[in-house]
Image 1 (tube, rainbow, N blue to C red):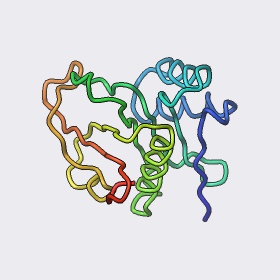
Image 2 (cartoon, rainbow, N blue to C red):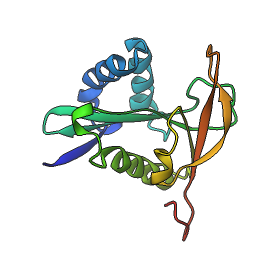
Image 3 (cartoon, one colour):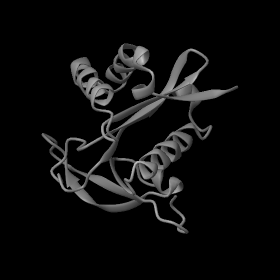
Image 4 (tube, one colour):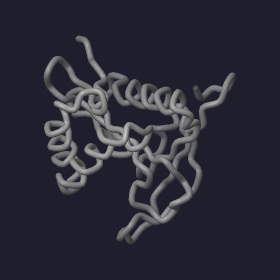
Length: 158
C-alpha cells in the first residue's frame, strides 16, 4: 500500500480538507488551521508548514510546523505540532516517515533545530528526538515534555 506525503504549500486544493481533518483530531478551532495554512500558502516561507499523508485519497496522518505550539518557551522555535496517525495505520512507521520528511524539509530550508511538545515518553526518541525540558502549556495546569531534534552533518539526526 503506497502512502504519499502532501505538502499543503504545494497543494492548496487540499487546504480545506486538511484543516477539517486536523480540527477533528485535535479540537482546535477550524479557523486556526485555516489561518495557519493560509499563511503557509501566502508567504512561501519555511514556517508555518502543514503536511498530510494519504493512502490513495484518504488522509491517514498529518503534522505541522509552526512558530510556537502554545507553550511558555517562545524561544524554542519552530515547533512540530499536531502529529497524528489514524489508529488503523499506527505501528507501521508512518509517524516516523512523516517526522523524517519534515526534519529533512526544514533542514533544506536552513532550519536545523526543531522542537515538539508531547506527553508521550519513549516514542519520539525512536526517531532521533531528545527530551530537552519541561514547559508550561498555555492554559494547562501541568507541565509537558519538550523534545528537540537537531540535524547536523555526520550526526545521527539528519
